[in-house]
Length: 367
Image (cartoon, rainbow, N blue to C red; front, side, top):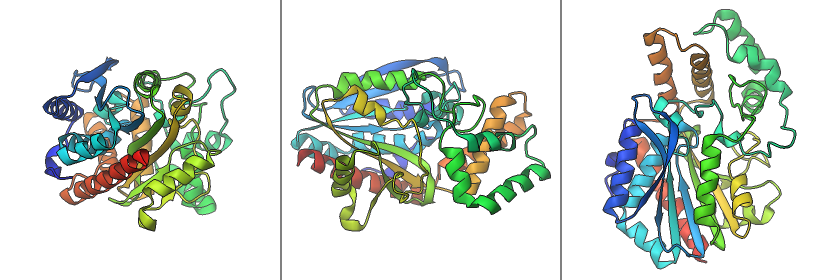
C-alpha cells in the first residue's frame, strides 16, 4: 500500500472498528452498521460494518471481507483500512467501473473475544448449509472429540500421547483433514458448523442482497490467517467444486504468471483440507444473476500443530469459563499468536500481497 502499514493495524477489535470507520469517513463514504446482539469483551458494541465505494448500480462489484474467523480479523481489518486510505487504489477501481464493498468484521464477537468462532461457537465458514436437509456427518471427528476437548487444560500426558499416536498413524495432514472439515454433532467442539444459520450468516446474506443483486460480475477476496509459511498469502479458490469456469477465471486473474498460484481444496493443492458449508455458497444463492469469482487470501503464521493446540485451548476455555484468570489469559494469548503475527515484517507482507490481489481482481472484473 502507499500508506504507512503499521498504522493500519489495531491492537483490539474496538480500535480496529474505529480505524475502519475513520478511514471510510475520511474517504467521504457512508458506513452501514448491522449491530450484533451480544457485547464485546470490554462491553463495547459489536457490529458488521459495511462501506460501498462506487456507484450503487455498478455492473462489477468486488467484496473485501475480514474476520470470518473472528480473531483473524486483525489481518483483514488492517488490509481494509489500508485500502480505504489508499487514494491510488480507490482511483484505479473507480476508473475501471468497479464498486468495492468492504465488510468489516463478519464475526465481530470472535474478533473482540479473541476466538475463531461466533458467540454460538459456530465456525462461520462451515455454516452455509441448507439446514432443511440432512447435514454432512464427520465420523472421524466423532472418534477424536473426547481427545480434542479434554477435561483438563493443559491436557495431561495420556491425552497428548493419544493425540501423538493418531498423528503418527494418520500423519498431520490426516488429523487436519478430519478435524477442520467441519462437524455438526458437538456444539462445544472444534469447527462446529452449527445446526442453524448463525447471526453472521444471516447478516452477511442481507449485505449480499443489498450490494450484489444488481451486479453482473461479482468478485470476493476474504482475508484469513493461520495456514502456511509466515507471511505468505495463499490464494485459495473460493467457489463451488463443480464451478470449473470460475476456477479457471480465478487462476487467470490471480496466479501472477505462476508466481502466486491459485490453489483448491477440491484437488488437494491447498494447505487447507476439504471443507463443507463454505461461506462463498452464499454468493451463488443470494446473487444468482452474477458471474462469481472468489478467493480466500490465507496468510501463514505458526506451524499447524501450534495452531491446533491453540484451538483446543480455546474450545476448552469455552466449556470452562471459571478457569483461573492466568490460565485464561495464556490461552487467549496463544490464540492471538497463532492467528496474528504482530511484527512490521509480517504486516508489510500482508499489505503488499493484499494490494496485488485487489488490483488483479479489479482488472479481472473490468476485463
